Amino acid sequence: SASEDARFIIVTFATKGVMDFALNWVLHIRALHLPHMLGAMDDAMVDVCERWAIPVHAVHRDNPEDAHSRQAMSGLMGAGMANLRGSDKGFAGLGVLKTLFIQRLLKDGHDVLISDTDTAWFKDPRPIVYGRDPKYADFRHADLLISTDCIDSTDDESAGNSGCWYTPVQKNTGMMFFKANNHSITFVREWEERLVIYTTCPPEAGAPKGKCEGYNDQNLLNEMIEGRPLGSAVWHDGAKNQQHNVRRKEKCVSVFKGGMYGIPLEEGHTEGSRRVFLVCMPGKLERYVVGVLPTIEYANGHSFFVQQRFLTTGVWPTAVHVTFTWGDSAAYAYGKLQRMKDFGMWKLGSINRYNTPGR
Image (tube, rainbow, N blue to C red):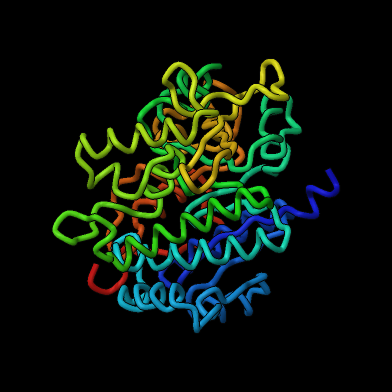
C-alpha cells in the first residue's frame, strides 16, 4: 500500500475556459489530501494555479518542436481557449496534449488517475482502484480502469457483465486510472496517434470524402478497447468491418472465447470480485487488462442525479462526473454548474455565469 500510494497521482486538465470548474475540482481533492496536479493548457491557467499554490505543469509548453504538440496547439488556439466541448478541433487538440503528458507521467513511474474538471470527489479512490476493497479485488490486475455511461444498475453489477462490459454503451474517459507499465504506455501512445490522425486527417485515415468527422477522444479510445481500427465505429461499412473482425480474431486469439471478444481474466480471480477483462489491439498490443469502475462509486450524471442510487443503496459515491446534462452551451457548461450547485458540490462560492455578457 505504501508503494502504491507513493506512485499515485490524480490529474486534471484545464484551459482558462473552465477555470472555475478546475478550482472547484482542486478544492474537492485538497479536502481528501490526495497527491494531485493540474495540467494547464494556457498561460492564464498557469498563473491561477501559481496564485492558488496548485501543483501545475504547463502542458501547452511541452515539446514545442514536436509535430504532434504543434498540431495540438494549433487546434487549441483556433478554438479560442473557450469551453472546448463546443469545438471539435480544440477538443481534439486538448486530447493530444493530454495523451503526451499521461505518457510522461507513466514513464516517470506514476499510476495516473485522470479526471475531468466537472467531477466532484468525496472519498479516497485508492482502496478501489488498487483492489484493496474485496468487492473489487480483481482491479489489482488491471492496467486500465475506466468509468462508464451505463445507466442500467443491474447490468453494471452483474457478475458476467461487470460495468455493462458487453452492452453497447460507451466507456467514459472522464475518470480513468492507468497503471505505470509498458502496456499502458503503448496503449496511450496509440491513443495519441489516433487523435493526431483524426486531427490532421491524412488520406490514409480513410475518412469519407476526406472529412474526419464524428469522433472525439472518447470514441477513439472505445474503438481501441474493442480492438478495432480507427474509423470502424463511424466511417467503415459492414464489409470493411467484417474484414477487420476476421483479422482481430486471427491476431487476438487469447482474448476470444466462443466468439465473444474481451473475456474475463481468470488468472488470480477472487471469488465475488467485480471482473476485469482481456483486450487486444491487433499488431499493437496483444494483451491489456481493463476493468470498468462501478457506477455506485464512480457515478455518471444519470445514475447520480436522475436515478439517485445513493438513496436506495445508502452508498454515497467516491466521485460524481456530471455527464448527461441539459443546459450547457458552446460558451460555458451552464447546466453542469447548476447541477453541482443543486447538490452541494460547488465549493467555489457564488459564481453566476447566467449574468455573463451576451447570455
